Image (tube, rainbow, N blue to C red):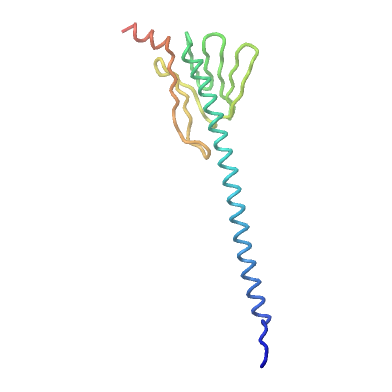
Length: 144
């Protein structure tokens, strides 16, 4: 009886199949890590934005006067918020804090409320963040 061995063609076919499976596995592995990194960056950006909005809400809530002028927000005489490109900054006396923010965000006044308008972008959904000043709301209510 003759012993049967693998032919060269069978070995090449097996190697091609292994190469294809290795390529697919490598791409899947790479895509998984890219998705995990993007997810982490998105979560960090959202958490940072939440901290900035919470700080801004606290400032606006206790403010005697608030003025919104496009990319600037003046709270009383001591606190200024400014949007410059993708940077949101808060200046109080000699202390400045910075947060990343989606580009083209603006401030606007809406009665006793201040609105931070965030347009749609590749990394952010469009939306408005309304912040109400209790003192200005009280002034509005007592006028009526």
